[in-house]
Length: 147
Image 1 (tube, helix red, strand yellow):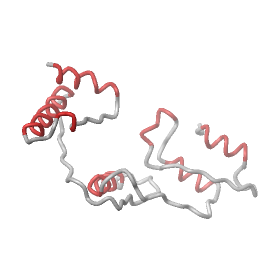
Image 2 (tube, helix red, strand yellow; image 1 turned 60 degrees about the vertical axis):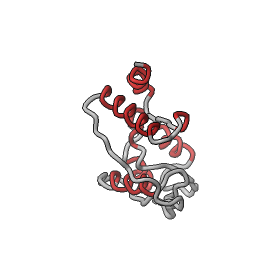
Image 3 (cartoon, one colour; image 1 turned 90 degrees about the horizontal axis):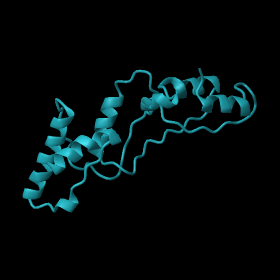
Image 4 (cartoon, helix red, strand yellow; image 1 turned 120 degrees about the horizontal axis):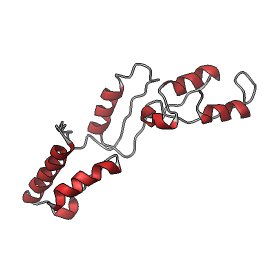
C-alpha cells in the first residue's frame, strides 16, 4: 500500500513521464509509521522517479553540536536510510547526559531531582523547562511535581 503523497505524485506526474516533480521529505522520520511513513518511502521515490538531483538539507538551525552528533550516531544504525550528516554553526553546546529509567515514575523523580539540584545551584525555578515527546508522559511528571 502506497502512502497518499506517492499516489498524489503519480496522479500528477506518473513515473517515467516528462513531468517534473519537486518533493521534500526526510527518510529519518519513519517514527510516523502510523501516518504511513516508512524508511523506504524516500528511496522508493528516488528510484521510481529516477531523481537526477537530490538536495540534502543537513544544516540545522535549532540544535547544538552535541545533540546533532548524538542524533547522527543513532540514525547511522538504520541501514535503509539514504544518509545525511546533520550539522550546525551554533557550537557544541552542553554535553549530553543519558539516564535510563526503570519506570515512568523513576524518570519523573529523576527530573525532579535534577531540577531541584539546579535550583540549589542558583538557577531560578522559572529557568527550568521540561520538554517531552508525548502528552501521555505529562501525568506522572505532574504527579511527581505536585507531591
